Length: 351
Image 1: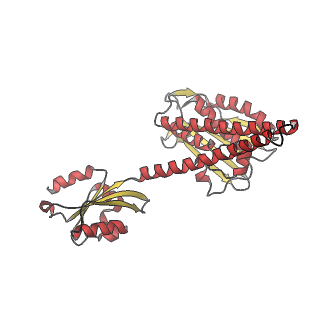
Image 2 (image 1 turned 180 degrees about the horizontal axis):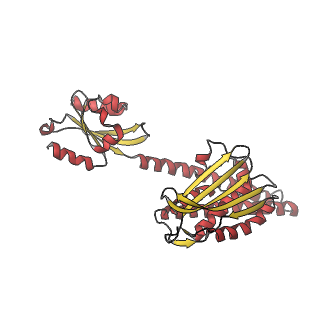
Image 3 (image 1 turned 90 degrees about the vertical axis):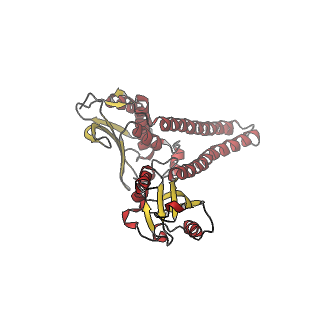
């Protein structure tokens, strides 16, 4: 193998590093350079990769106590990444390049997916266990002490209806989220009048807001262009944001929805339209804002369950806006207010 042939490894996604018998780095491919930087050439292995298992494997191969050794390691900088590693001795005809070759395969996405799946199943089990336990308790009471008490039976049947509706909402949201994730790589192609859509959603929402003494005011800029979108998904997005404002807003306050043209929508940098939902209330802690779009994350679990929330509403919003190639931003002043804003590019024939 020549230097030219060795350079073909620059086109390999896996990280390839070669070390000499003193554990000094003699060569690495482009993928490895992107992670470690060019300056590490000549450095001892332990300065580059500090994982004890990888160090042990390298030493064993150098000392001819083993070959084709593998394991798992974590590299923490500049961002944490998970790798599977394999250490082999170079064949004699390649010794001019070094003695040991190490291949690192990035398995961060796989590891995170496995962790997410475990966490998701645990969260889902918890979310279903609560209403199922309530239903079991109600049924047991209705079959036992309260079987002849009409007043208790009516009360418990209403509570059972609420719990059943809560599970139904959870399943609906999970199905919606699953559909969005599977289609997120396919952008919508229809034109949507966001002003008209928001007006229809808010007309219905005003009845729910009135129960809490709230009003919903809609203000739209002049000459709002159409956007590229899926009308059903955007209806769900607006409803989720408005319902969120009703659930967490201060009673007898005003929810303000505003629609405006914007010069640039991240990340496409195309002109578009933004929609903001503002509510007065307790606000959100700064450290909680990045987590609001996580599945099942709630800042106030008790309040969310009281209002029938599934903990999936903002996750649905995030994935829907991602599919629309738009941007979603959350701003809040703790103890005062919160504003949720999404922006979506205009139709291609509009500016």
